[in-house]
Image (cartoon, rainbow, N blue to C red; front, side, top):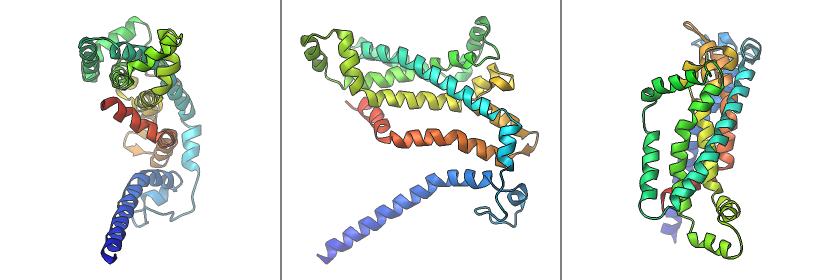
Length: 282
């Protein structure tokens, strides 16, 4: 008995130690952004101060600079709008495409799905020139619609491939039974397949929205005016002026922009993991 209790105690100690270490590592970036956002400039640059605590009274000067002297709130709105539109376009095209390929008989469904996914692996630098020509042809230069048109070319292939594996894990017999009960194929898709596939669809939503918020190269290239920028481009451009880094405002912008996504990940973590694992293992 004593040996069993000792092993259980050792296991619990190891378990909680690992959990504590990973919790600290994951939470530390947010703590660092939070404390830097409210530190005074003199406190930040004084090497004699402890960087992990407030050595002087907290200040709101960095938040005032961020809100009053930049278009940060406008950039947040642009990013949210572009993200929601790209998510809608991706779901509208990827979900029916993935379902059709998953139910395609023979080997062609899987082959076409892999071919679509391979387009996602093409380096963005190779697509830079043709996409710029398309943006110019559509007369979308220096508008937010330039990135809205470009980003689905990356999100749709990956989302289609991911959802294909998820739809394949759903037995076709369920749809056959629904159609026997009087539903059409489309009604069975909407009322049966979609609810079962919410985990995979949520994974696509999080992946797509995160990609838009982190996009830099195309937003930097296709958008030049400050009022049309997204957070990923506007913050580093207008808060890094030459060799002067506005660290407090930079950290405040990063914290505000990353918190909603972090909360979204944590709220739907189980569904997010299921979206990857169920779709990849049949």
